[in-house]
Image (cartoon, rainbow, N blue to C red; front, side, top):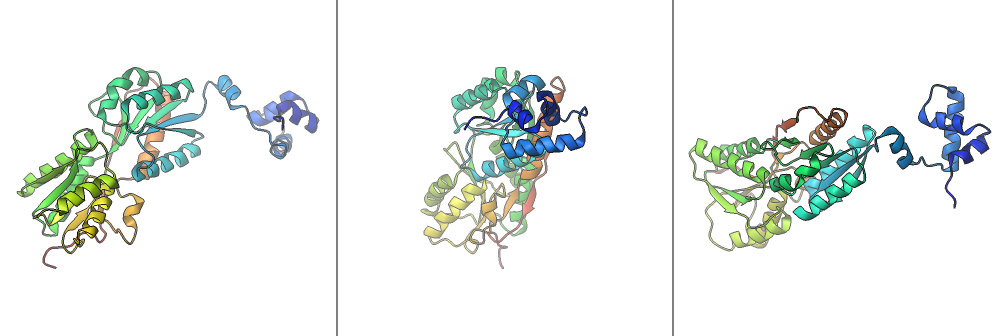
Length: 336
């Protein structure tokens, strides 16, 4: 079926090409009645505006790029959903690319989005090492980093206060009577995870309790990783009364490993996560966790990027959002 053009619409409407063009562009040079009639006809005929031609005239594509390490990660997929919904309310569509936790691929898809002439890019970086390879590219297009804290770099970013989040978590477990708390899944390849570990360690020092850290050799925090590390942990004697995971997906994996090892949560050991992904609220999981405000992060990131698009020479913006405690049923008070 041939594509319907403005000339086709004009012929059926019995008006000039210019009149149809004015109706679609919202020009005040035609009456509201004529505009409504033409727009109704466009819809009936299946006319689709040529976005490429429009972008050449307007010098904007009204498309934002989004780069994420993995859409299989519920944290990233939920954040992506909020970004897409809010971007659309601001008149923008989202073009999503997956970097698969690969620094080279991350740079490749960034270049791809620049070549597609997106107006700006939001990205959840693979890690803080993403900055150097992308430095030359981020100078070409407005960019906002999200989730990973980029405070040491001249970039725009939106993140949650990861340090404070782990302080809140550790203090909560301490308030339940726990004095032997295992920090599970510490990673050195991410500034986010370094800040979370620092929050735990500083709180242990403040509360005068000995820190226990189980480090991860993996480059991601997934259910599979939590299950593998949890299975190894429960296969040997352990003294900790609570496990504080660096991410919810790790905690869900630990929960599975605990079940298979005959360890009861929270009766035998309390378990806590970080992120508050939607899976955490399922009745079978009911995970106590630290909330990252997904919707606020998405709104702030899109607004920040739009400000940067309008004012490309403005100062870099940095926003740290507060986390909050979500109490469910995976932790118990000792002695009760």
